[in-house]
Amino acid sequence: MKEIWDNRMAFILASIGSAIGLGNIWRFPYIAYRYGGGAFLIPYLIALFTAGIPLLILEFTLGHKTENAAPLAFASYRKRWKWLGWFAVAVAFGIVCYYTVIMSWSFIYFFHSFSLSWGNIPEYFFNNMVLERSGSPLQLGGINILVLVFLVVTWMAIYYSIYNGVKTVGKVVYVTVILPWLILLIFIIRGITLPGAMTGLSYYLTPNFAALKDPVVWVNAYAQIFFTLSVGLGIMIAYSSYLPRKADLINNAFIIGFANCFTSFLAGIAVFSSLGFLAHQTGQDVANVVASGPGLAFVVYPTIINMLPFGNRVFGALFFMMLLTLGIDSAFSLVEAASKATIEQWKISRRTLNLFIAGTGILIGLIFTTRAGIYWLDIIDHYLCCYGLVIVGFLEAIFVGYFINTESFRSYMNEQSEIKAGRWWIFFVKIVVPVVLLGTLGYGAYQEFLTPYGGYPTSVLIVGFGFLLILTLVAIMLSKKERRL
Ligand code: PFF
Image 1 (cartoon, rainbow, N blue to C red):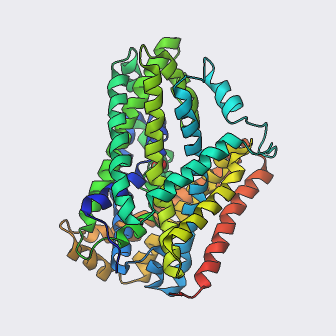
Image 2: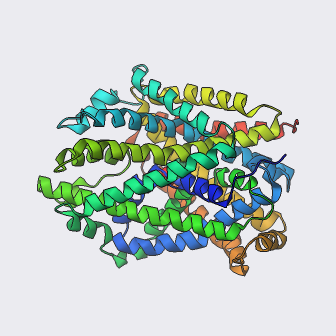
Image 3: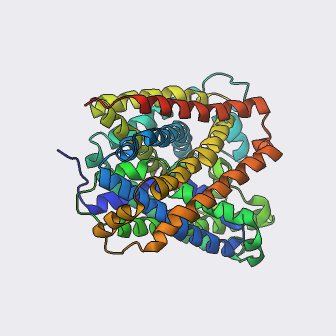
């Protein structure tokens, strides 16, 4: 019998949970600040409407119509395209291998917040006490046992969250979506009532319209939309394949897209009001304290928490609880995409398979638990997110736009939905998405050519790029296998 979501809410929350992740907190606010402040919302929303939502609708329709995860969803139209499905899933799996390591750090910090153990120099604590970071990517320095222990804990949490497939997921997401929203609300209120908050917010929101003339700003807006909606990974295809026959696809895509982007916007308020406070307390300019990525979460935030007038430990624990709940539903959505694809290909029980996936995830994750883990995490993240995801999105649009009957695809989604996709949808999928994503890819490659990413030695970057290549080969090999049910 076909497995389906308990109700529409479960599907919507699970997709929102996948979309809202660490990126909303530690990437969006920084990108917005850097690329035009309040004015960035213009390219960002344009990107949402012209690429994000059209692709979300595309993936939902593909999953719903074929009732399959990515590989068979593509194969049921054109057999030759099956590899693209496996490639999307392989990239998703590659991402979850390091995403879980970031969650492991968050676990460690969650426990440290009860004693504020990072002390007065959080940067030193992060690099030397938690990561025990080595001097370069090539100095692995052995495995950091504590990080490994919490990596295993993270995988156990993932395993149980998808224990019975979407039946369990549909329940877990009520907590993992709603709880971080509530905590975010607490941080917004806390943030804007701190001295210096308004200065921080003016850095975040003061529009710089001149920035809109710069193509780099647009590239970043599209890349961010793409990444934040979790498209191009086969997740939304797998999730929508569990929808009942009668399900509104387009409406759901709008709800999920809006909920995600609104959350990012609010996260920016929480982050920048606190940065304003930090600048105020230390007598610096906000521009000097701005951070993104792990630096924001594990260095700057602990510093801010130290300075709060009261409840430091509680706010510390809440912050890392927020990261954990934000991350877990993105992490298990990445696993579910791979898991469903594999179950469809081989007759294998879900639980055995998920154990195998968790085991492999931990094994590959070992590299990120070494003393050089953070370097490799940064490098692999760069290649998978800047290239892997974007390549899938580009080819997906080309596939639906040029290799299948786009008109009948569109009428299928319209039969299903209250809001109708007009001809605009075809225009976005055939022209806008491919052109923009190709531009993003080209721009990324050009930058890479000018300056090697992150100042790493070329040999190291070749390994990162090689990882992407390996995933491609694995995908091609898997797509040659016949379906065995
Ligand atoms: N959309 C989530 C985030 O922004 O954190 C999850 C995610 C998607 C993580 C894609 C990583 C990624 F490459």
